[in-house]
Length: 92
Image 1 (tube, rainbow, N blue to C red):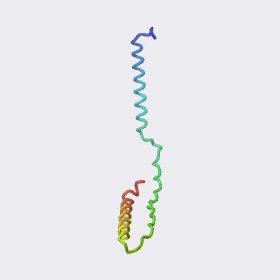
Image 2 (cartoon, rainbow, N blue to C red; image 1 turned 180 degrees about the vertical axis):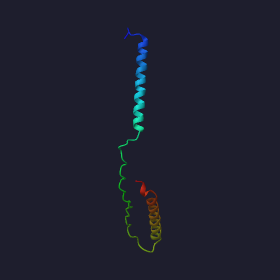
Image 3 (cartoon, rainbow, N blue to C red; image 1 turned 120 degrees about the vertical axis):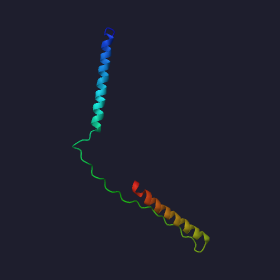
Image 4 (cartoon, rainbow, N blue to C red; image 1 turned 135 degrees about the vertical axis):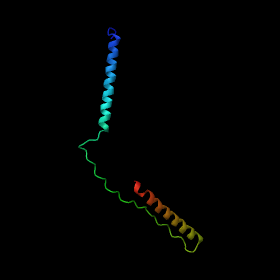
């Protein structure tokens, strides 16, 4: 390599850079170009709606303040679960 003049090294380097640039342009344009033979993929089947698992609570003695509080809490949790299922149910 010591006997090869610098202008030959320069020309070889320029040729290599031009080849890499041309290859890059050709590959990137080939990726962007849509394929003519490719057809649209069929739509995936609709996913079934997910249902929340409702676990019954243990019975509490009737007539106590605790029963009213538990019933109110269960109602609030049920409404929250319903709202969340409506909002995020189709995004899975």
